[in-house]
Image (cartoon, rainbow, N blue to C red; front, side):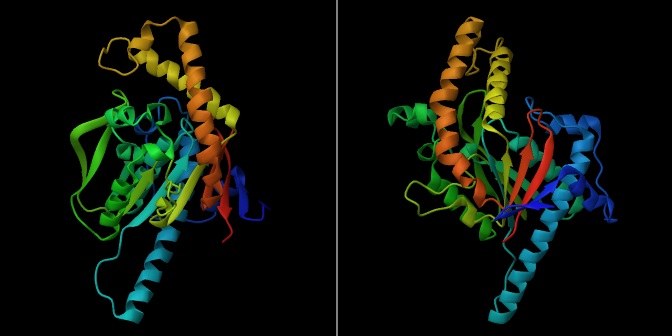
Length: 311
């Protein structure tokens, strides 16, 4: 096993052997059709990948959860505290187009089967972006996705509700087709017991440095790859989104569908160079070493190693 000062580097074969060498119950089952419903349209994942990477990862997360509850239980016993255990939160971060959503949905699927009597919920931090009208009014539309474009007070209040065992918690809805918050529509978390939070800012500090999403997360994951892979995946995804909007005038990308292919490519490249790349370099990549687990992908989305923090 290789290592750095901060991480143990477990290659694909070693990682897969972790599960093969141990009989674990309950078993996890997934069909090809179920897998395709979980994989983002610009991502690539096989059933073999799911079994070799994400099932062992989910079982490692259960180990983290077990230690979390033991610590809370010991503390409560020492201090005479009574009450429910706060939900266990898993934070997942990484760049745009890197496959965070696939990772989050797949882990939710595995954990839901391994914890059949536990509510495993998933949200994205997209719902806590400011509405487009607000961003326009504050001249921040071209900074969408940057730290200041999120309503971090609202996200902090949400996380406090979760950790204080509130029920029926409202989560604002975001539409990628409309490229905006959906007014007066919410997802309701009835009783979150394990909560996966996925988003590019899941490991970021707020601009005033008074709030860190990771303060609420009990284990954090960063989906990682080289920047040139992210650029290629983002551009490919953008082209697909434009193509799929051709028959939907309400879709944010509809007008771009009337552009020439060259104009589309120029627009996508401009977004990458002026928005996504600076955001990646200035605000996303610097959070990578805060994660307790790194999932490293090669150019074809193949996961070749997992990095596990030493401390």
